[in-house]
Image (cartoon, rainbow, N blue to C red):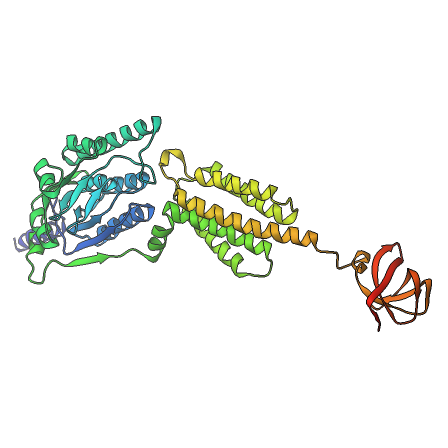
Length: 443
């Protein structure tokens, strides 16, 4: 009887232990809040940062990942990547458009709607999600309709998935409508407005969200009510992500590519200067890194390579500007078509003009030096003797010997000369010079 009680007690304790260890199936809670800030255009580096932030928050079993957002828009491909990561996130994510005066514009609309919890701070705006080109202009022709229809279907699917206002989401894309946080809450675009993280946690607590295919209830009130404020772990971009964020700007990537080519061109035209070659090589490698994440058009790159080859050809076999001019034309066309049409990216026209003027100036310098060199009299070989000064090595009776450059030459003169008379070479015929008396007379 005593043994039976002991067994029963042990089984009960084991069951209690398992219950305590088992995670709650109908709630989401944790001991810390993770916080990441996005302030600027949406780029591949930002997509990588958000992905790594979700991974860090999940590994730490964070109660919530808050992405503080202020963006004017960005690349569609990067926006798609971020939206996919948010929809599949294993940790609750709140996108908080903040601080006051911030906006979730264009790509920011997709990102905000894709979050488990969509929040806006007082004095913020959301909307104007109509697709534009990389330079901010309207997309023309059939491509406009294709991109717009895709964007509409994409934003509608996100809004449907998160139970938000699908009709407004479509208007944000087709009509570029934008609204304040007050209107956004009223229309069901976002869940609520919050001025700080504590208020966000308080209002989000008790919300039911879909997480990893299950419906869970957020339990965040206890964190919001802590005396010292909620425990917030700040996530910073790594150095790699910061560098990538800079160089993946379409104009910066183009500038690096052109600077690299210009540096190598200057090195080849002035061998031994070293610095232009070193700087050019580094810039080209950084441009190559950026090209791995940007939608580069292979034809545009080939035109740039061809243009550079023409410019280098001008140095090797001077054409007095023909190859150089062809190189400038090829570089200009390559710059205009550097990015794929469907990406809607384009290099700033002013930047292209500036770079082409720089290459043209360098080409003019090189061509000018080549022309000047061609006009310069030969300084070596027999032809280099013409115009040189020598002296008669003995009495010269029409034909005799003269000393030029320390060498004795057979020379012909139309008059008799005495030894030591200064002469000037006027022509050469085989191994015989023709000389005349120099005005300065004898040495």
